[in-house]
Image (cartoon, rainbow, N blue to C red):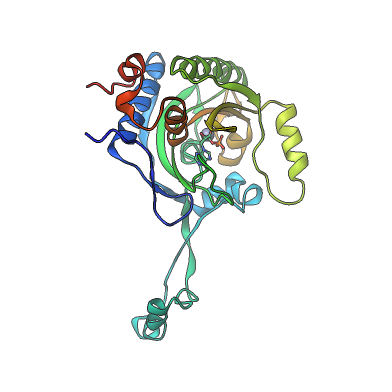
Length: 290
Ligand code: AMP
Ligand code: ZN
């Protein structure tokens, strides 16, 4: 097999094609995450790359990150009306001027549909989900590791505050050790999300002060450090928004997110583009010899 794992550009910035050697590493990471998760009862769910627009509106995503959201539009007109627009498609004209926003948007993170699925429940015990999704974010820059379309694996839990705090702490430690075991040396940092517009700084400061988000950062290129994973608590935000409870209080949630392309790119940066030349121990760990 061709062992050159480097992603191929597509002409669209932040969108790449991934060779088989790259996907072998991604599969190894998936297996590694699953092995770490094996001692907790995670329910595995496949997640589609779109989500109800109403769900993301309720979750506060549109208010907080309108600049990142990709909307899905489609053509609501008749074939007769289309006859006028059709020629524009061939000439790069504005064939899309009648497009209307629909009830779905592109999924920006894998955990939103999971939180929404808990609506109406009283969680007698913590619940745990293992998910993966193709995510979309309309990023403004396209340096190495900053894609618009990328895959995110997440471990998600919901329950009481006590549970979520302890769970996040444990997973932050585990993921740090796991990345160190892959010979990536992550720095662990308190982080914030790219809130947009007025009040953004205030939200970011509050998020940092409460230590809601930790990022594990690794070098992806010369002097280019990116977050390859994050460990988050959302407090009662999703319990309140979607209406689920734990111990009679609004349910709390936490998640650990892994950027599958970013971790792979960090390995490529550390060990070179040809996976056949990676250290034997690392190859074995990622199951590349099978
Ligand atoms: P976040 O929800 O921002 O904490 O994202 C979770 C993880 O997804 C990050 O730690 C990254 O590994 C990955 N990720 C986020 N944004 C991007 C992006 N634009 N391109 C590639 N990976 C990303
Ligand atoms: Zn999440």
